[in-house]
Structures are given as structure tokens and as C-alpha cells.
Length: 129
Image (cartoon, rainbow, N blue to C red; front, side):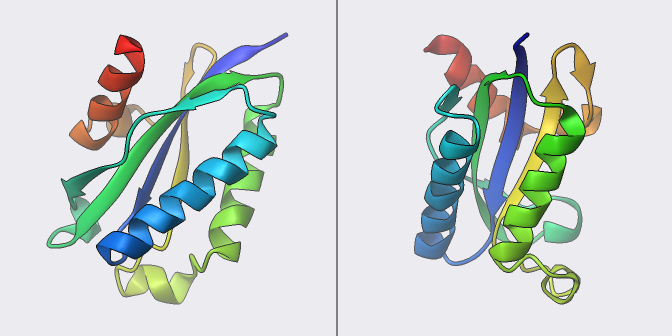
């Protein structure tokens, strides 16, 4: 049985590096979910929380999967680590890539994130497709 999921993507490296990392993450996610996924365009947003003062490049992914939430989150965190997301980088406010599973099926895993403009913007675009 397939369920719908939403993943937010973000990076706060230089403009070109951030776009490149989002594109690489989209390729990873397309392969991981066997192509059953759509992506919003990339867009820039102001950082929030610990990212205040930094510009981010964001995107939102929406697709269908039969995988469990824990399996998805594990794969996302492993990908982040492989792309340089380390505790040291995090402490310095450096985000090479951030992939967050926000929802799966009717389960909202990150309700605060779903209310953020950096997610809503991508969701609005995906809903208009």
C-alpha cells in the first residue's frame, strides 16, 4: 500500500553550492523512491531559528511510498551525513543539506515546519501542478 509523503529540502551554502546540493538531493530522492516523487522549484528564503542571518535555498518534495517512516528518516540522515552534515558544521550554522520528512500518510511528523513559509511556498507550487 502506498502513502503520500512530504519532505523539505534546504541548504545554506553559497548560492551555487546550495542549488547544486538541492539538485543532488533530488536525484538521490528520485532514485530512493523509484521516481514516484515531484519537486517544487528551488527558491531562496531567509534563515529562521539558528539559521537567522543566512540565506537558504529550499525545495519541497511530495510523492508516494510503501516504505516506513523510520526507514525513510534513516536514509535521509545517512544522506545528510554523506553530504557533510556533521555536528561540527551544525554548531557553526553550516547546512550543506537538510532533508526532513514532514508527513507520511495522515501522520504529521513536524507540525511547526509545515507552518513555515519555506515549506508552504513549495507546497503551494506542487498543489498547482
